[in-house]
Picture 1 (cartoon, rainbow, N blue to C red):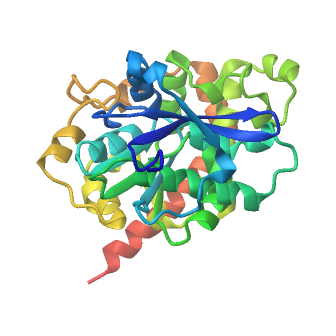
Picture 2: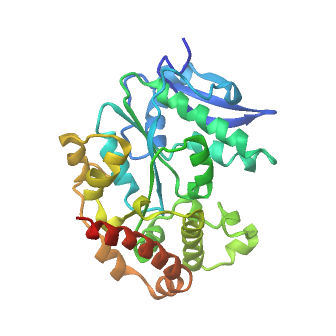
Length: 323
């Protein structure tokens, strides 16, 4: 029996000499119901059995397809802090739906060129297919597989579409001022000038000299530009204010998933703190923005955000004109 069929899941991809290796963990009765992939992994690794019994295999030995694997139902891309966790948590409430929320192994496959200069797009496509197939075959009873990507994975939209042609995807975004306030309070990995200077084509030293609000705005603008340059179409755009209704009305039907009462209950809770009820915070965030934030948004983000809104509004106009 293969590791995938026995309920083992990839939890880490790492460079081992001249090859990429996969670190596996036995999930047992656990499911990926936490807001983020790594939270579930940490809980599993806290058990002595999972620490004592580990398996390492070659990434390039994983088959691109598996007859037991559930194919991905859809992918969620986002501008960060834009409701994607609410969407993924809503789907994760179903016992037959496996949700991979910002899984580290997927990120390692996509950013493999950082560790393996000259890696081809064909290799990245093949590895992405193989990794997703391993997840799709790992847990019995899985009928649907939803992948929530990291925010910077919009730079790899072409890789996803080559690997999984025809699989639906959405890009979630919101007012950039609200995102900026959220990152000012608790910034994510890619918003740190120390961790991701290459996002803006700057050296680490140059990135450290950029004011925080400007760096955040420029990083978010790069994500917007990537989606716009790729040619995002209206039906793929979800504005934050459309949630949670758009999950049931647009996203779930596109993914071929029927939502039940447990999903709708999840949509009413705070995505990152499920013990709390969801409380709208858009107004509070906008009124909390300081002058440097507002100036940075105006200079770097207002134009790409307006272009996204114009594209999304085209779909609204088309929908309103339908009989």
